[in-house]
Amino acid sequence: MKQLNCLSKESIKLLNNNNLLRPLIKSEYIKEVLENVILEKKIEEQAITKFLTEYRINNKDELKEWLEKENLTESKFRYIALANKRFEHHCKENYWHQAEGRFLERKNKLDIYVYSLIRVKDVNKAKELYIRLISKEDNFDDLAAIHSEGFEKKTRGILGPTSLEKAHPQLAETVRVAKVGEIQPPFSINDPKGKIYMIIRVEYYEAAKLDEVMKEKMAGEIFDQEIESEIDSIIQDLMDKETSNKIEGKK
Image 1 (cartoon, rainbow, N blue to C red):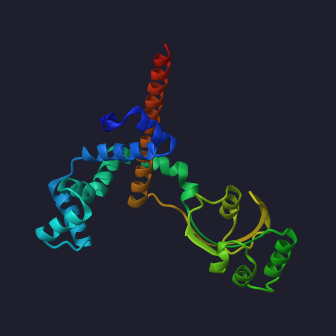
Image 2: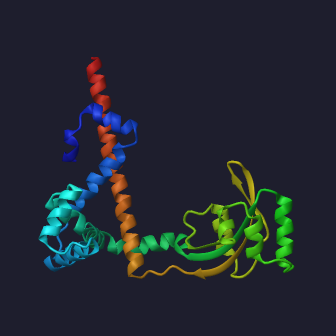
Image 3: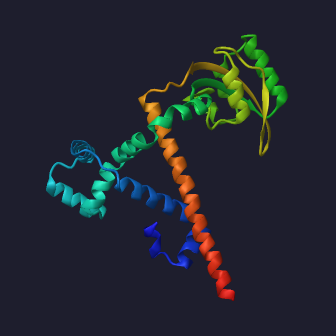
C-alpha cells in the first residue's frame, strides 16, 4: 500500500507495539478500495442529498461553513457521504454470489431468540429456584428480578431479541435446543470467577431468512474477512522487511 510509504521503520514499530498499526492499515485499505468504486451519477446525487439532509445543510454557504467547522475538504466530504453506497455496491458486485453459502454456514448463529434467564453462583439455590418455577409457585420474571446475579436482573430476566453469536457456547446450545415456553433445568458454565448456574426459558424464536438485508450482511462479512486476510499479509511483509533490515545491519 503506497499510503504506508510515508511511515518510517520506527513509526511502523511504534504503531505495531501499541496495537495501532492494524487499525491504521485497515482504515487506509478500505478507503483505497472504496475510492475506486464507481457509482451511477443518480445514486451519487441521492446519497449526497441524503447526507446533507441528515446534517441539516440547506445550501452551499452552509456546506462551506460546515466543512470549515469539521476541518474537511470537499473531496473528503464526498468520500464520507458516498462511503456507505460504495460499500454496498462493492459488496454486491464482488461477494453477492457467496452470500447464500456463508448464510448456510452461519445460520445457527443468526437465528433470533428472546429468552428469560436466571443465573446464580450457588447450585442449591439454582435447584430451589427451578423447583419453585416448575411448581408455578413463583413467576420467572419475579425470581429473576430478585435473585439473578447478572445484568438481566434489571430486565426481569428477559434477553433479546438477539442472536446467539456472542453467547457462551453452552448457553447458546441450551437455548437452541429448548422448546419455546419450557423451563430448562439448571446447567452450569465455567466463568473466570467460578461456576455459574443458569435456568432459561425460551420465549420466542425466529429463524434467520436469506432476504436482501441478510445478503448485504453476509456479503459485508465476506468483504471484512478478505480485508483481514490482506492486512495479515501486509503486516507480515512489513515485519519481514524489518527483520531483514536488522540482519543486514549486523553484517
